[in-house]
Length: 176
Image (cartoon, rainbow, N blue to C red; front, side, top):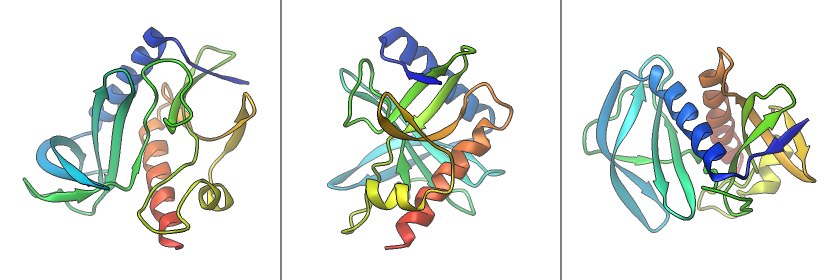
């Protein structure tokens, strides 16, 4: 059974572990522009050549952690514009239904990364319903809310689980 973390210090600790696990697998940091609906952010992404995965993470004080992800066969060029495939954004504290990411603890004390399933894409039909109708990973109800289970942060294959999730979101979006 999983329980969603709500305490600020627990979420902050889980977020640090999450980013550290991803960082372990990254080769480079690359300054780019990350585009989103309504604008873009100039930032430095972390890139893993072996995974073909980039990510960017920042804390939006009083709101959530912004964890944006993308997939590419080659390293992005400096100052290029990147499109986000998905975001996994846990709240800074408490329960926030607008924040699609969350951390949960199991009965053994392991911390899991989970997602509420709302995905964006700028096209009609892309959203939570499409996601859960097509997601090929594990789904569980936690406190009467449906979550996609991304992975146990302490597992050896956690980063591959994150990549799988990002690829699934990309695949699901392509169905529309």
